[in-house]
Image (cartoon, rainbow over all chains, first blue to last red; front, top):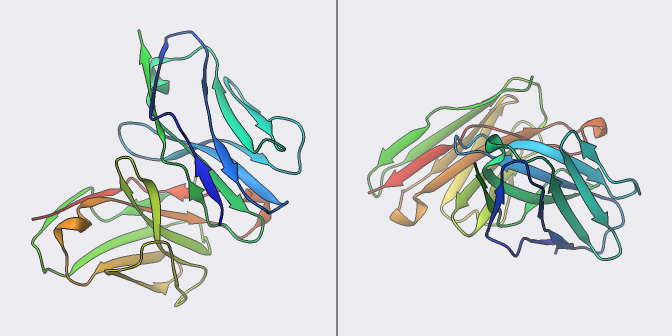
Length: 114
Length: 115
């Protein structure tokens, strides 16, 4: 069975600084997708960024980028120039190419200090 | 934009009551999901559906059932609510079209308290 591990329950970052959130996963599949979801205090979960396993290039979306290490099964999220609005819970998630079921990590709460 | 709505943001029920949580999506998505979210446990899949009248058990289906009579609507049913079902319930939907890369779109959640 696939598992997703987020070992840090909480992190804090100073506004305008950079922070990296860690995620590891375990799978025997070769075709899969990885996601980072953000859940602000209002609770609406939104997609931050996604990575296809077959792509070697790391995904980037504005201030958000990932460091995808396929051999190490690691998928970290880097947030640059942190803003107060980045404060939220972040979930790492995995899906195989066969269906759209997501396996989530336990999440990490990110706080941003002004 | 995809919109997933849930019938209530907050709900308080008594032990033993039958509880219905409704979810509606407006993007003609084939797949729909019900999760519960608890502190320290992340999101756990209760049930999902790939098509109308089809359902499959997720990781924690005990004490729950679902109904999908129309493509846009997916209902979660607590047959006899218990206090350990107090939780945040999230509904999500996704398209089978691969261009969307299995992305799921979430509703705002229903905070259910069972007394």
